[in-house]
Image 1: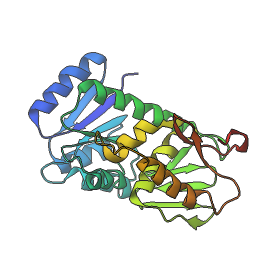
Image 2 (image 1 turned 135 degrees about the vertical axis):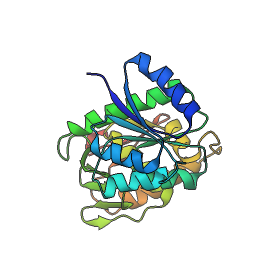
Image 3 (image 1 turned 120 degrees about the vertical axis):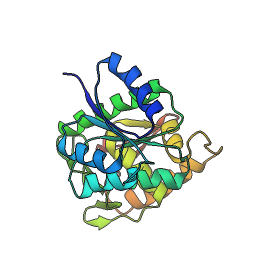
Image 4 (image 1 turned 30 degrees about the vertical axis):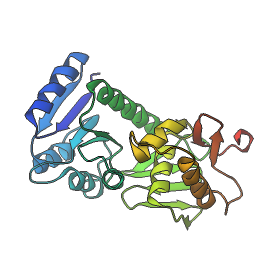
Length: 243
């Protein structure tokens, strides 16, 4: 079946480019140019993915995404488009419930690749098993893996009934890891998540990983955060896999 996309974007040139690129690839497209109209369409429709601009008339994209998650209880994957490339702006979008973000100007090929990645993650979550299997989404913005539960809308992570005290960067890293668990997230992908194309040299990412591991694993008998040397990181509940 063709993939159905909702484009919520008020820039006519960007919309025209999206239609020209995505329709020949077989996507079914619908669009809204106003935030409130986009929210209504997103809540009523059965779209496979939403491409959402942050700067919209009537209702901005961050507020729209939060309302979609918290009020409409809609878990459709959301790829957020933004011209703002600061960590704070990206954190706001992710905390509102966005699944991924892309900074303008962007390559249409990358946008389509990210859409396909979100669709794969959605299928993974829908078929997820229990604690020893894959991560799953129980409700909008809530992810679970093993004895860990993460709520992106509330910005809370809980393990064995204990709330984890995570920094904004630690929460973002854990969100990315749990979305693909027990799959691997490459080091470069995490660096891009935190710093975009301006990742600092040295051990900045390792420092964030160390702080995350201290809160996520140290108080518990079974560690979840594993390092794949020179490659990246993953969540795994299998002790024999520990690196």
